[in-house]
Image 1 (cartoon, rainbow, N blue to C red):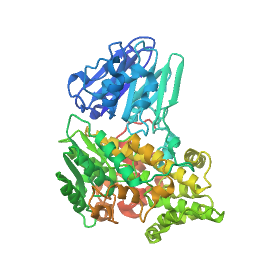
Image 2: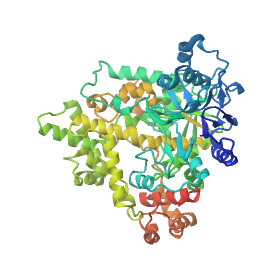
Image 3: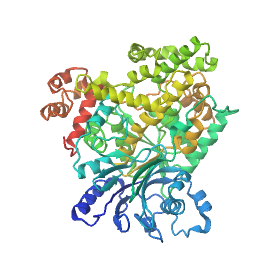
Length: 625
């Protein structure tokens, strides 16, 4: 994993251009502690590429970047190519390889096949490439956008970077009001906008082509092409097929010239990945623990580690550790967070990075298999609507959706929002209302009602481009939301909090083969069974202890904020954050209401946590307001 940056400009030798690129480049130093360089290339379109290296495959200097081909093509690359061996065989004698790493494989694929070669690549990646005669520059990103890449067209120049923050600060960009509204409403980007005006994310599954004639954005893979439909094919032995796909995904992602560890929370997803990876040389697993009763899942993680015979490192996290790390975590992000779990992720990653450069994560399971309770309300509503029109779902689907209605009792407020927003006649409208975070933060943010409507309509149009009236359509729309939008925000945080310590995260549940296998499944196959994610549970029976698969108390790495708040809420750092937000008159904040925030629910209040996150982010970011 690495940090890449660059500029496409006719005045590449201009002193301001050089200084600005150096600033962008230096802002990514944490992403690659094993090498750093900036290289320029003249020609029809002059470019300068910067790279910070985290060496994982081919540790020698032969794989240093920027990498130049014999013909003069130039590449900077952040990520991992898992099908290197297959691509080397396909290329054959058309290329004389001088390294054993994956960077040269990507360089060869792009030089031999151009942008058409991107669809051949299986991995997580973001790259910039200029061909031998400098007539075209490509900026590409992997299918799900697991690896970050941002760009900005500024007058006659195009800038790019692995993080929007390094671009925004170096180019002195102002706050993007629309992007702020996206975050305040949903707490993730709905569009490609960032908090920095004019700086956008390269869309997942896309490549940007820059030629003398102009800039074009091309799609090479789309999640929507694999969403379920009435034509989704049936499977004869789905658990066995899924087990084989999982095994292949994990084994491919164990490619490395350095040892690999894993996150092991004791839940089904991370336990499955850890157990499979242990068969391929996994060195160790890690878990973060809070010394507060009711917040430790370490006993389950210990059972998994013992079962597969690998060490488990338990990282104890105190309230002091947590609040000390908060500024570093928030300043690592391209936008603030409204959930505290990432602070624990950061602390565990920081500890793991003392010994490892690569870790496996179980991210993606809840999204691929619709394991969230919020997904059930619109699906139940659509099933009822379909039944009323003489098209009821199968009994397997009904049993999966309604078999344990008692588990929904704790989500009464969410259900109230869903139903009050016409969820039972328009399931997606009700769903969008239930994931709207403004109810949690209404005391703090003063948003523009027109932009709010635009943002909500934008998200609905993106997840339901053709409307959602049938159960199949609602199923596809929710899957589009969870995998295409919500998951991307989780991956963004996972990338930043790990790369802050120079640690690469791999996500086997989100390999291309997994996506193209799981996404098209019918609702009956995806949610069939007595409990959510029963398909994954069945596929993991052979390798994961029964006690892990059958547990019904997975906590999801929660943070004991309410317990800490009784002693921490009056602490100087917390009061200072709230007072600072008011004194600095931060944009879109109802500053006159902030004084009472400390008396409304303590740190366990999601709105107060969002405010703390935002103010910490502003304090650690150079943003023109």
